Length: 119
Image (cartoon, rainbow, N blue to C red; front, side, top):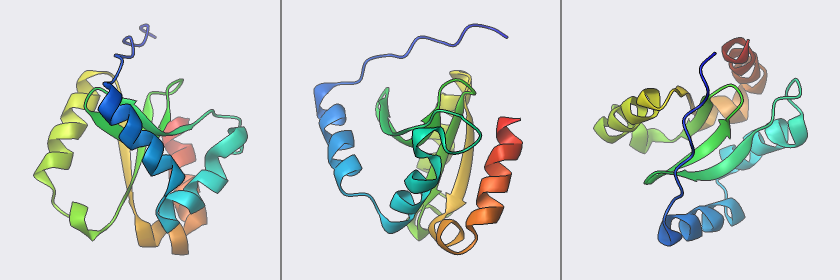
């Protein structure tokens, strides 16, 4: 497996915004974090609201190069999200997107899908 690309430091403004997002998560993000934190999902380490380039990644497992995004309806057919996913892919990341409602109402299915992507 090739060595992962180096993490580029994010600017002070985006780091500050990421910190604010960690302190005020959406209901779905808080629910997902309870499932992922402290290596609770098969011992994989996840971080949340991570600044990366000019983006903030909802959840990321650097070891497996997997980004998890929890989206609301404003993200439906988002051109910006597609462009962001392409940038992340060029850096060696895979992106898994889940709707807020799926995280809140179908947690088991979401976790099984994440585990399949981590394997």
